[in-house]
Image (cartoon, rainbow, N blue to C red; front, side, top):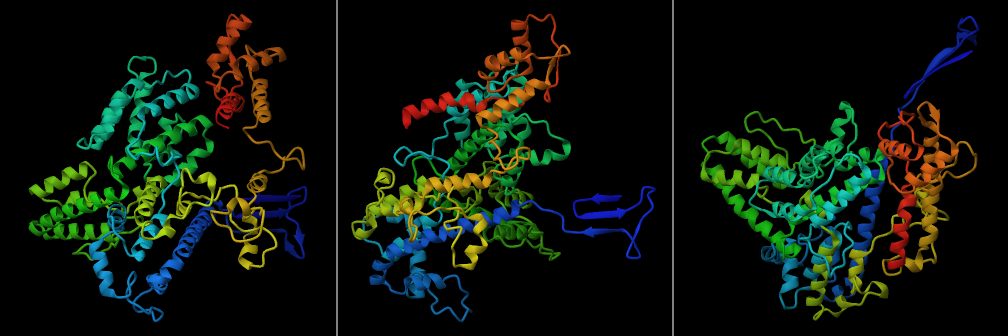
Length: 634
């Protein structure tokens, strides 16, 4: 007999006879162990690969931008792009030939940066000032727009886009629809009539955030609905925390039973540096409805965060300039506190805190010379915490404390909050720059070669912002017949199918890439083979056939009053309940049995979740809506 002890990073073995005596093999006892590295998930590897791909595509867009400017730039300054490439080198590097970046001399650069202290000052001037700017300055501004083009969370057209929209009424109505599907018996209802009150609270710049949370939690639930009021208030409080950027308990929002050991994964801020990690962990076991609720909350959080970045009625550049000026005013306050502080150690700590906040340097205690651990990005909240601990009682310190409470002290142009900026804001500015400077440089106003996109992206340069390689196309390399070693090495992560040879650009993408065949390859890579029917592909979890199987399988396992359901009863349940409800609860089943089977009492056994069925015909129920949308829009 052979005994095995298999672990996560070891495998022990022994060979014995039937009396459990260890046998010998080649004169030695037949036992041993093998150690190996513990298996790790592919999440980290996937994250690095995604980041590499994103950076590679950014460089691809910037290279195309350089090619568009190259001919005209050669007439103005033939060495401009060479200087830009050297700008990242240290002055001590022997490969560095010039000390300037934008202009040929260091003096010209200094004058340029003095006139435009930030890139947003330059962008704003290019949009508004009716004069011919230096082509090098135009390139620098457009380069910044293309490089940091923004997210694609909103599908709004440029003409209808507004950074000040937060649409609380739509949010509340959709939330009510989702909770009626997700928790039909709970009585959770939010008051759509108070949507304007919630929006007023959010937009109130003089109200502290903690007060906003309390106010929103009070007005969001429907107080007339007494049956679910307690739970509605509980959920409202956590939603208000989440949308305003505070730590929220997402297990309460999504009504998930969580062990105490796992509670930390569910309790986080949506703007945490590890928020994406937490979200990836909690979303794996959520239903479609729970995921939609989570997306709603996240989208509203992004809209509110954007409202705090871009002032109503202002462009992105104007808002960033306002931040720059506010920062300068707050710095004067802080310097006054540091200069007049009676405790020199605290004054020095304030100086060091600001130094790290702006330059992200290590924070060192002046007396002990001990550096604080730099385990994570030095965030605004960390800076606020140190400032509050080291302030004195002066009037300037009182003003600083007030601004910290309002989350307005020392705003920065570059922060992790900028991830909520949509691409539309940057494209609006790009189009204004093109219209203003295109009078002097006609090549900027070259029409978009893709006729179908001209309504939303009239210029060729617009495609560098709006175009995204579809996720189902993947890396833009062919998986076979490559002569490049790096490409051959990464063939397992490539599935794109070409229509024609040649260089791929945003303007010829559909001429070079077969979207349909690439999409089919993408789906095939994600499917696996069935463990029962060897060689057959598995069915998608949300396919009509598989959902029908899971519903009938769950119906087969339950018993009512100690007896299994007959085939005819199961078919009637299938038609009357499952085809009409996204989620079927135990209470709905009882009511149906009382009404249709006339049973005097009902005792149900066999449900994995005693309150509801885990399976549903969600895809079947969505199909009429999808068909209607297709008939009206397609």
